[in-house]
Length: 239
Image 1 (cartoon, one colour):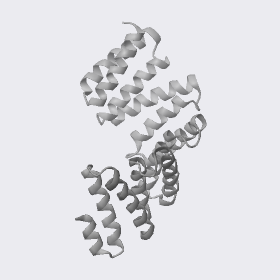
Image 2 (cartoon, helix red, strand yellow):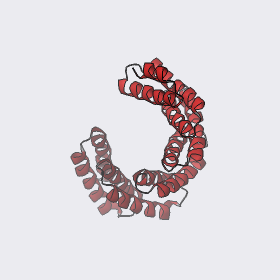
Image 3 (tube, helix red, strand yellow):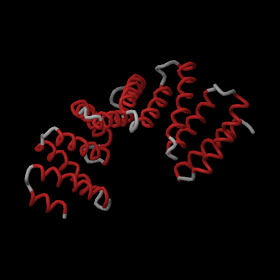
Image 4 (cartoon, rainbow, N blue to C red):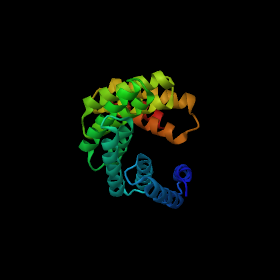
């Protein structure tokens, strides 16, 4: 049982996880963890990689408490060996934030902020990876009712995504819909309508066969139109 074999087990486990074959992913990761722990020790960074992959599996299985416990173990080792500002620490913080988003949104927000700070230092402020973290941070702010903060953060995410992928990309359209919903919450229905029409245009033009996404985009626009008492237009959009 070599270390190269353990690395291969980790890779195959990732493929199994992507396919939804949790049982096989579990078997492969546990074997990899056994090898790496025996050969390298429980606090070696390669052992931590397997632990973090196991946490990803637990998250996919909905076992959030165990995922969080595993990630906290990873984080303690990484901070000790790499320092608190290392990019790998940021990746673990990001996973913790995702796990805590629903039950501990304030903690999740703080973790996203820490991860973002690390990523910006390592990657620069306009990297598409930063845009994803900003999107997640904006979403958790929105869910806490911090609409102004969410709006500002998501606009920055949108700017990066439009630069990286183009203004007519699905990545941009998703953020546009979030921003439209926030504008509606802030009673700025004109702005909300403009944003959602842009999002709908992307789905209609570039992804007309994605029925679910197109229907949802229309539903959001119809709701915004209804807020403005444009009932006939809303009915036409929704139909």
